Amino acid sequence: MKRTPTVITGTVGMDAHVIGTKVLSRALREAGFKVVELGMQVTADEFIRVAQETKADAILMSSLYGMAEQDLKDFNQKRLEAGLKDVLLYIGGNLVIGRADFKEVEKKFKALGFDRVYPPETDPEVGIADLIRDLKARGKM
Image (cartoon, rainbow, N blue to C red; front, top):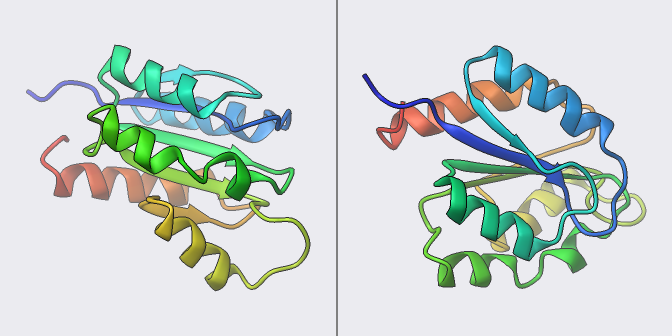
């Protein structure tokens, strides 16, 4: 029997919009995941430290205040330097300031190292189904 996957959730940078991660964290627990809920205004370094400490399988970040690109510009490099290249990285929300074509936003964040990028108001079930599929593909579920 494989171990229960560990997932970290939280809002990145100075973002205080925590309700989405609360909803997602609860849905993840109900789906059988171990969830480490960091809450709001989490630094990139804290996500990395906790991922190392918990041997996390995935980091799921949200941001609604539009500054995620600035908050995370060096995150992937730090993640790789920390030995976390196998940790899945998902992000969702209002990731840039102003109106933007989501395909362009998705392209930007994939270039920053994210495996999955979600627009605002994505149902938690969509992300959870993707997470299960991605973890199975890596032999972690």
